[in-house]
Length: 394
Image (cartoon, rainbow, N blue to C red):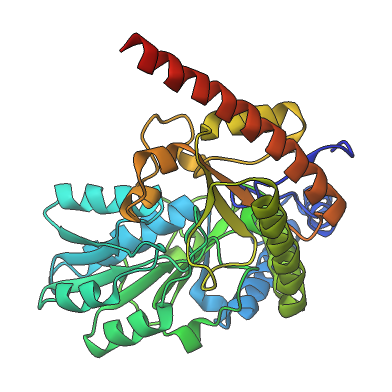
């Protein structure tokens, strides 16, 4: 990456760390065997897999036997929701989730609706926090699963996961949380939280793309995800990507070591950015909960300036941000998260998400803010001219 480039899209994906790259390269060159093979090369590969599984488990307070590697967060979410729902259909057919979930959760629920399951989509307040009272009211005798994300990927708001888990347990309902944005952002312990299933994706904490994990609490009734071989304790068929899993193990170990200090560093730089932007540019608003949020996320609406134009103009200057979830980029549909929060269409169309890493410096923030100030000023002047012309034509 060139020195002038500034990467502020870490919610979409993060830069792979040197330690992770080193570990993966080592596996590519020394662990050519299939981890399911019984010969020495297979045993060596399986040993790497066991080590990675143990690291993932330790990072979230789980047992290694409760960790199943997947191709990423999307697969893990699909597996958790569909696997638990189908395995427990004899007990009921009702699922509770929220309107601001990741598409992999929402689409999984829609798929299950086609199979006859009933889904309740609870709302959020103006800060993007789940309406807990709606969850209480939605629980019925046929409710078998609740799935609520830990931290929202667009605005960073944290959800009351522990409280929801306690509610689910009291009603003998399975509880799954999509924690993709939370690993490396907050401390997570599955036993303390009381969740039955939890989704992780390596590329959100400086690991490789295309690998993730699903934590499944021992005793949870869940169907296999794919048919085939007996990999992953006969729960997830397919030859395991050992180098990617090994890289994930290193990445999650690094991400959760000295977590408080790392989060503090990111929070300081994000708050500095927030303050400098508010001083340099008028008529802006922060999206998401002001305090109950992950440290790296800063979603801002710039009145009178289109978000897509801002992002493209920043891109020309070597500054990389986004105007929504990477999984939904290219869609003309407005953000379902901001809509659920009650944001006006104009505010939604002017929202840009900046997500930080510890690598970002104050000097870079100063440069970004100055560039952003010029861009917003230019776009607002163009917008003002258009409004003037439209009024004249009327």
